[in-house]
Amino acid sequence: SLYVWATVLAITLGGLAIGYFAGGELSYRSKNKFSLFYVLLIGSAFMIAMPFSSKFLLHYLQSSKLIPSLLFSGACFLLPPVIMMGMVSPLLIDSLSGDKKDAGRMAGTVYAISTVGGIVATFLLGFYVIPEFGLTLPAIIFGCLLALIPAYVLLKNKKFKLLILVSSVCIVLSSFHKPKAPSDIKTLYSAEGLLGQLLVVDYPVYEKSKIKYYSRILFCNRIIQTVSTPKDSLQPTLPYIQKITNELSALKKGSTVLLLGLGGGALANELTTMGHQIDAVEFDNRMVAVAKKYFELNPDIDIEIDDARHYLNACSKKYDVIIFDLFKGEENPNHVLTIESLNKAKILLNPGGQLVLNGNGYLQGKIGRGMRSIYKTFNAAGFSVKTLTTGPDEAYRNALYFATLHRQNTLGEYIDTTDALVLLDEFPVLDILNKEANRAWRLGYIQNSIR
Image (cartoon, rainbow, N blue to C red):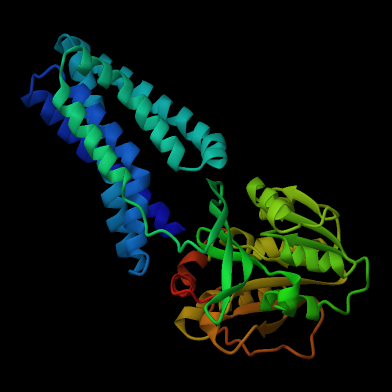
């Protein structure tokens, strides 16, 4: 979200500033030739420990207020390694500059190499390493690589004390874990990557203290995305899927449906069973693999790996229905729900076609301003919107918008858009408008409230 980006950037810049100053002071006051290697080694230890300390901290802060939690957690696990990295440049310049004449040239060279390295690493991590391997393993590997040279130099010069201390700290921090799930929960899949953490578990459903059956659940960043139960359990599909399929029951067989957001494929499977042709767009390759392996995704569904907004912009195919079932954990991505995006989707609709949106269930008060703004944006794009919800309690329901370009007789639940905003590409505020709703949804999951 915007708050996370702002926090990370501010902590990074602040940490580098502190590091530059501290490194300059250390190079001036200390003439220990091993200072640079000490700093590198401590920095590598913080980097290796970061995935473990972050998970430990975030687990205990997840019920706290958003912005204080972001600032405190970021300062605890992100600030220390950034400070140590900031200290490296002035120490390196000091060790390489033989006299004052070389100082400026050497400083320019060091910062140029550092910046180019940062650019290469950013592209490498952003486009390949993190999408493929997540955050934990790369942090550990990069930390170990960073420690190789200083560890070698210090061992060669018989400087054992810091090596032992750093190794001990890494071992202690790596032991920090969140409480383990009960043993009856079976973890089938867990991986980090493009959309964060994906987790598939078989979750026990009890009857008279005995396990009656297992529900298979897909989590994205610990928020439920898909639930599948055995056919003999007689449990219905998720309420929002029932609402969508009921509302689309009048569609003639063979209708073309574009589903933006595949998840575990439950909605796509239902629509395919109804006899429709489904194109699904999913951002993360892992999600498709999980849907096929663990949730019996119908092979007749055509899947495109792409960003939903990019697909809308590039697509020329016409559809009878376009469904926005997009979540990053608990968040609707704001770039897909602007008036510019809806106007593009409108062009892709066949005559009489409709857009469908699945969102959180908050529609009233300050907490519902984000969903009301999405509603107002649909109106501004020329759509008449019918609103349905999956239950009376806003905290445990989904809100669904069914939008058409012709006037609808039944508009469902009344939405007051007086204080709502029209969402624009140049004014991406949906994360901010939805922050309380998103927080409430996450707290609901933390408290084992399953929609």
